[in-house]
Length: 88
Image (cartoon, rainbow, N blue to C red; front, side):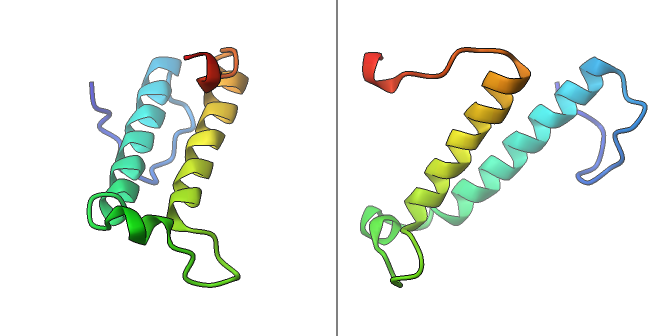
């Protein structure tokens, strides 16, 4: 189900299910935009390249976004245990 709220809309007064759906829709929208600006248009060497000593490769930024989504949403909000990629 897709929320009918526009991005950036005020969420005060929304019921819990509508707010959850709005948050999920927004995360999906911005994730799709992030991937559209990176992995869908750049090849692996471009994603892994460090173009400046002051900036990390783009792929690191994507990894940080995923890590914080897990930390804030899955662990803090949903109470899920940490994802252990080593035992997967």
